[in-house]
Each structure stands twice: as structure tokens, then as C-alpha cells.
Amino acid sequence: MKFKNRNFFLTEYLGRTLVTLCGLLMIGITISIIGFIMSKGIQSFTQSHISLSDMLFSKNWNPSDATNPTYGSLIFIVGSILVSVGAVIIAAPIAISLAVFMNYISPKFGEKILIPVLEILVGIPSVVYGLLGATILVPLIRNTFGRVGFSLIAGIIVLSVMILPTIASIASDAVRAVPKDYLEASYGLGSTRWQAIKLAIVPAAKANILTAIVLGLARAFGEALAVQMVIGNTIKFPNGIFDPTVTLTGILAMDMSNTINGTAWNNALWTLAMILLFISFFFILIIRLIGRKGGKQA
Amino acid sequence: MKRGLKLTFAAMLLTGVMAGCSNNSSGKKASTDEKQANLSGTVTAAGSTALQPLADEAATEFMSKYPQVSITIQGGGSGTGVNQVTAGAVQIGDSDVPAAEKLTDPSLAKDLVETKVAGIGFSITTNKDTGVDSLKLQDIQNIFSGKVTNWKEVGGKDEKINVINRPASSGTRATFTKTVMKDVKINDSIGTVQDSNGAVETAVNSTPGSISYLANSYLVGDKKGALKTVKIDGVESTTENITAGKYPFYSYEYMITKGEAKSPVKEYIDFVTGDEFAKKLEDMGYIPVSKMNGLK
Image (cartoon, rainbow over all chains, first blue to last red):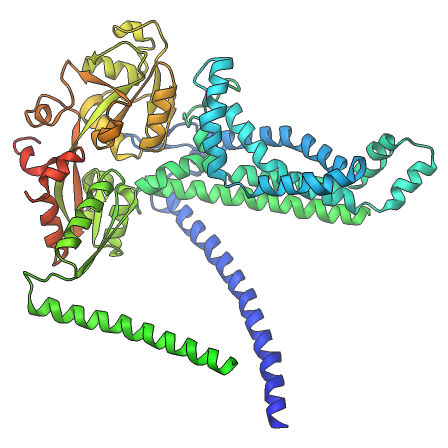
């Protein structure tokens, strides 16, 4: 009898403790990461006396200048925004169309071929995308449009291929979640299949599709290696799509390991990381707001 | 059955712990007994990826001489090297530039002891189609500052010059700025930036009219003919020219320790700079420190 009780205690409370510890661990890790980045990022302003408006709005990034170093990050922020928004503009329509195709036009083909294909695309490491971009896409752009080949458009194309499966799979879930009643009701009113899709299903799934798009945008914003390999990394505003430029993640990847803790340059890079973190928070906030609003509507 | 499994795991764990402990104790014993013939201990180094191949090769040879010493070399960049050795996480920081140049606050550098372990030459490389064999120092300055934009202005074909730089924090670029560009600023808003030696090689080979700079250690062996190198003021980038002071584009590789190096770190650094390793060092594209006497 006693043995049975002890066993019960162990399984119940041991299990619960372990699981609770895991949850606390995750929260602890997240808080420590955020706290660390913020404490290092603030050092630019407290230790190195860089002004906040300079850092955010100035376009002069010149930390290696011995006499007058400047730390303006506007070019990086604009570069990151341009490349991720560009990628979403290309990838989102294709992804939504794929979602509609997989669920309404050709479900069998969608299930057997498209879903595995999308899963494979998601599984390809980003460095492979970067390599493909650098060896195939960049010379292609160079031979067709002149210039150097390393350009904003190369970054946009590589990124859109990378975020396409992400947006497509979530959008597909969104479309599938629309209740069949909507489709039936639309047919009942005399619509064709395409009218039903365009006017009833897709608008009903709008909230979740928007979530998918913002997730894709967040992923595009945070992508470092693949973009850095094809975008040219020139520290200037691009004059057109075929001009090279630079992103927040790219400059972080290139300079972080070569600067030394405590120097103003290193602090400025940590501030860039902090800016990246805040922008990701911003995206997550938007996703939750959309989710909540969509929920209310339904 | 279950009990047997638990016993087996426990036995394995115990054996592992005992093996680990026993290694340590025998190591300590050897180091106190015979210092000269039987060095032992661990050496950890991190930092410059330009120095890393040399450090790796030296570590392999050193460990075959003294099997009781275990050496680990990591990369991560010159900045990482200096950071780690200052924090005490590694014993040697590999760096392409003296720590004082990277640290703006000299008090951070006061404990660090630098040893020059090799000299290294760099070359200006261009795409094969540019048509120039030699460039004046002034021309190179004008190209990288953006004043000259076409190869025909410096004696080559009529083709746009595509500048390829390394990131501003790179040790290679720091050497380029110090010895070639001098007071002339590199224009960061022209051309493109590639992160690593490999990426620079690919970019230079595939971009028409391109020009960049690479360490000579990268241009040895089967890579020798892959890139076109350009002479500076008619002088080629060879060891003889550098040690004679005729070729300006070179620098030293440093191994930095916190305080004076102790055994076996000291023996390892002495080995890297010693005559035994000098031939291998030259084969790998570096210059032995002994030959660099008389230069800055």
C-alpha cells in the first residue's frame, strides 16, 4: 500500500515539477537574453555618449574614423525595411494563391505534392540559399541588367523564396479553417467557384492570412546570412533596385566579431541588435493585435 | 532487465568520471617532474581567421612533439581574440592588429602582452580582364577613394572599376588603410563589401573590372594562379621584397596573452616563432619573424 502511494506522489508531482521547471526555464532564458541585449545596447548612450537621434536618424556610419566617428544607422534600417517589404510584396500574393490552390482548386495535388515541396523549401538552410544566390542569381542579374549583380533586387528575390513556404503554409491553414458553410452559402446565393473564393473565403480568412504575412515579414527582417551574401553591403541608400545596399543584420554579422568589448563601435553594434529586437517585438505586437481583432470579428 | 540497464548506465558514468579524473592527475604529475622533455597542459587560442591556419598547423606539429599538451585553436575574428583573452576565457588571442589599435581605451590593454609571430604580405587582386600589371600607390588610393572610376585612366581597358572591400572592422582592411591608403579615406559608398576571403575571391573572379585585396596566405598552393595579382609601383608582393622594405603592403600577426605567457603557452609561442617551424610557415604564405628584422 505504501509503495503504491509513493509511486503516485512521484509520478504526479515529479512530472509536474519537471514540466513547470521547463516553462520557467524558457521564461528565464528569454528575459535574460532581452535584458542582456538591452543592457549592452544602452551602453552606447551611457558609456560612449552617442546621441539617440544621431543613432536613429543620421545616415553617416563611420565608426572607424579616428578623428570623428559617427554612428548613424538610418541606412541599415531603411535597407532592412526595403528588402523585407519587397520580399513580402513578391511572396505574399504567390503564397495566398498557393493556399487557395491547395485547398479549393486541386486538393489532391496540393496534399501529395505541394505540401511536401513547401516543407523541403522550409528545410533548406539559409546559407545554401545565400550560396545559390551568390553563384547563380547575382551573375544572372549582372549579365541581364549590367551593374555589379550584387543588388537590392537579388536580396529581395532570395528572401521571397525563403519566406514563401512560411507564408504559404500558414495561409493554407487559414483558408482551410474557414467553415465550409461559407462556401455552401455562397453557392446557395448563386456564385461561381471563383467568386466564392474571391468574395467569401479569402476575406473570411483575412485575419489569419495577415498573421501569416506579418510572420513572413518578421522572418525576412531577421534573415542575416543569405541576404548579406547577395546584397553587396555598400553603406549607402540604393538609387534603384539594381544598386547594392546593406541591412541591419548584414552589418552586425560582418563587424561584430572584429570589434572589441567596451569600444564605442562595439556598443553601437549592440544598439543595432537592440533596434532589431524592438522591431521584432513590434511585429509580434501587430500579429497579436490582428489575431485579437480577427477573433472578435468571427 | 530495467535494473540491468540502470546498472550499466551507472557503470559507464562512473568509468567516464574516473577516466577523466585520472587523466588530470597524471598530467599534473608529469608537469611537475620533467618540464623540458615532457610538456603538458592545455592551450586555448581564439581570434583571427587569417592566423588560424598557421596556428592550427603549428599546433598539430607541437602536439606531435609533446603529446601531453592539448591545443585548441578557434576562429572568430581578431576582435573576438582580444575580447576572449582579456576576459581570461582563452590563453592566447590571435590578432591581425596590435590590441592597442583596436582598443580605444588604453587602460584595457595594460595587462596584455603581444608577441609578433609572423609577418604576412598582402596583394592587390583584380579580375583577369582589367589589363593592368602594376599600379602606382597613388592610383590605388584614387581608385578606392572613388576619384578614378575607369580602368583606362590607370592604363587598363575601357571598363568601369568595381571596388570590392572587406568590412570596416576587418584586420586586412585595417592593414590596407594603414599601409596603402594612408591619409586617403576609403569611400564606403562605392563598390561592394564581401565578408570573407573566400567571398572576395569569388566576387573578384566573376565581376568584370573588379579590384580588391587579399592576404598572401590565401594565395598559396592550388590557389596561386586563380587570381590575378597586381604589383604596387612595379614591385611584386614577395617575401624578399617585403623584407627588403620595397613592398609596403604587409603586417604582422600577433599572439596576445594576458600577462607573460606561462608553460606550455610560452613554449608553443616560441615554437611558432622558432626556426624549426619557419620553413612550414613560409610554405603557407607567411613570413618568419626572424626575417622581418629592420622593418617597422
